[in-house]
Image (cartoon, rainbow, N blue to C red; front, side):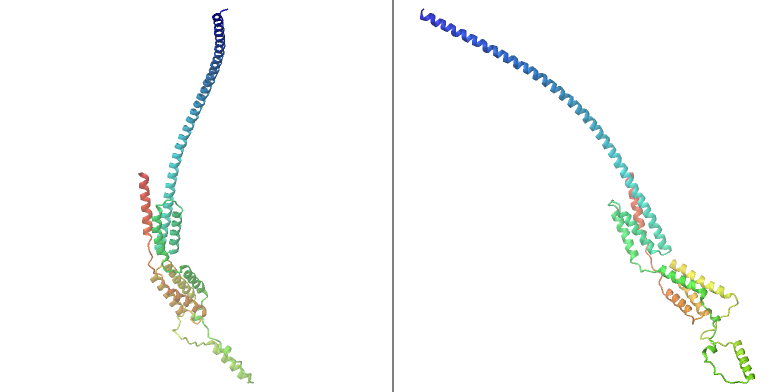
Length: 328
């Protein structure tokens, strides 16, 4: 064979092999491509399913968010209503507290002016300050300062022991029924002062004369008074005398409670005069009663008492300003 034929056959064989190999690679490529396309379709379907599930979840979340937003709006509305109710309650509570405080201070001011009850006024202002201190409103600070000034003025007043003085007057009144009258006082018996006589033998007629003389001496009594002669009282008049004395002391007690210095001392002076004129000055009980009345007469009742007008004006002004704020 010629070399050209051999070359041609070899070239043809090589071309056939290349074509066959190309076909094999093309078939493999097609299979691989088909496989990749199948996988891509499967992945696409899964992606669609995943996207659908994601959309469903998003829709569910949006629904839940809508419910949450609605619940949040309801909660905000309820919170606003609660805040309004709380503010109304706090405002009304402060108004009630101010009204009660005003009433207490008014009563204390009346007691202070009519009966001089300083202790009651101090307690009323302390109670008002304690109630204001329990509130969280800073507006009450200025009001508490005014109350504190009135409270300091009351505490600076000199203390008058009215209850103790009233007890001493009551003790004197209770002892009046037992005080001895001057007209009822009897001198000491001469027989009790003298020593026992020495027994001397006497004749019977002498003994009889001595006994008669002794009886005659007991029928007549001569008594010396170191003061003006006491006024004799008719039977039963001692009762009215004692009642009149009690009435004087009771009037003095009323004047003391109302801090009427002039009436208090005049009634006590009249009572002392009755005691000194009609009762036994030598009796210890009478002296005790006189000493008590003298000590009571020396007590000072006419103390210039302050008013609580500053506290009352501050409380009322605060109430008026609070009402205006509410209306605005």
